[in-house]
Length: 164
Image (cartoon, rainbow, N blue to C red; front, side):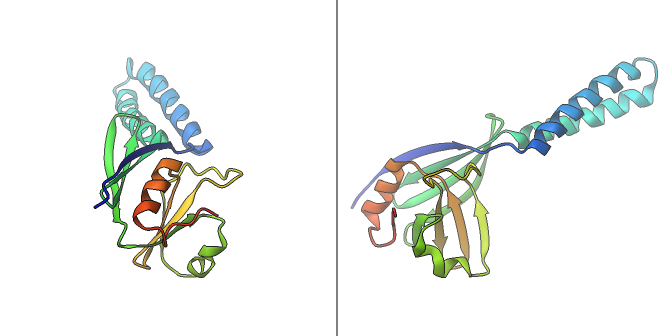
């Protein structure tokens, strides 16, 4: 029985809209806090915009942690380096194929109307480092594993993992 443990952390690219919204809400919080020193409704609006700024901040800085352990790929979403949420767990037995996103081996899977989950950085690099994993034919998962993780998965399921 082959046992392996590989961990990989990928930071998601923050969108311009989220950065703008975060700065805008922080500025509005400060402005309404100053106004709230004289008028009570300004203080209430400052509290609401402050709560909004907190939630935008938590969702603007996202990282994905991939963990491969004993034929299982676990994906966690780390928000603002402080909160962790389980995003998904997939076994190698469920996996149909793992190949680079631009691989010709995925052509038959791209036309399927299935749910696509993107747990990658969102940046298209050259050469492509993002991989698509198709599980049970009903979900496509886009991840960005490191070489060590690909090798570990390929050692367990060599006919399902492609690097071209």
